[in-house]
Each structure stands twice: as structure tokens, then as C-alpha cells.
Length: 217
Image: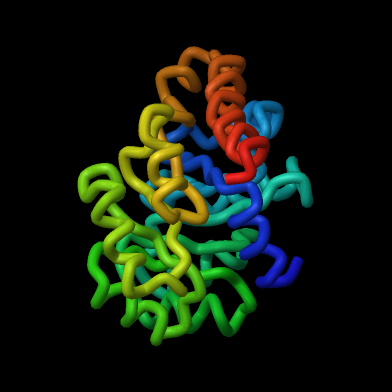
């Protein structure tokens, strides 16, 4: 799948489920539950033990039904490891030129993290086509909207503290997508094998997107 296809999928489906600290042997079950709830984008963070193996396992299990990415990627070497495992998009809490350039070399989507207008502009100049506003909830949706004021061409995914109460708010104020962690992929649910609860949470979030589309938003 091309880089353009992945970018379009991120903007179309809007919700990326973040898998962090999950037991590797349960990764595919998590992916199946998320898919059943309507999620089509999943990210495994590289501060999770066995992240590369989890990405490969999810990719093998889900095939083209779900787009698989890697998160908490801080440098080009980790990005390469993730891409070799099958990651189609790479996210970071920070901006690293090497990571962005390597993703572009391999035709993958680089999503560096920014928190200020200066960082946003630098990331775009380094070759990013979409950026991660982080930490979103701590900074606030109004601050994100203010960044987009003079930088209305910059496409932003809001990540960090996104939940059912504020998801619509960030989308309404200009985010093209959301990265959602524990509010969706709750490790207590996983530990207790309550995968139906993850499916239900996924459906709650995807309902927000469907409602926005029905409203023409």
C-alpha cells in the first residue's frame, strides 16, 4: 500500500488505537477486538516489550484489514526496525530528522510530535506531511486550534489524554485524527481477557466519527 493510501486512511478512519505495555501474546486478540468495533488503525509503541514482534503478528493476522503503525519511535534505527516488522506509519512524541527522512526513504508515513508552532514548521520542513500534537489534553483543544490559525495547511493528529469526553472537541477544532490509548486499549481489560469491553469501547469511539459524518461535519 502506498504512502498516499496510508495518509488517506489516517484521515478517513481518524482513530488510531494505541497499544502500550500489552502482553505480546494478546496483541492479535486486541487487534481483532478493535477491528470488530470499527477501528482500522492500530499503533504499537516501542516502549512495549516485543513491539516489533507484535507489529509483525498483528500484520500477519489482520492483513490489509487494519493499518499497523509504530509509536514512541525516537530515532531512525528504531524506525527501521519498525518498518522491517511491517509498520506502515511511524509516530513519535518528538521530532527527529533522521526518523522522518528514513520514513520518506522507505515510503512510510512519518508523524513526528510537536507542541509549538515553531516545532510544527520545523517538522514540516524536515519532510513530515502530518504531525502529532502532543500532549493534546494537557495543552488543550483551543491551543491546538490556535496553532492551526496561521498554519492552516498543517494536518494534525491529537494524541495524549484523548477520551470519549473530548474526542469530538479536538476533531471539531481541526484535528484530522486522534491517537487513543488507555481510554480505548485498557490493559486491565486485556489482563482479564475482557476483549468484548475493548470492542464496545471501540464502537463508542467510532460512533463519534459516524455521527460527525451524518451531520456533514
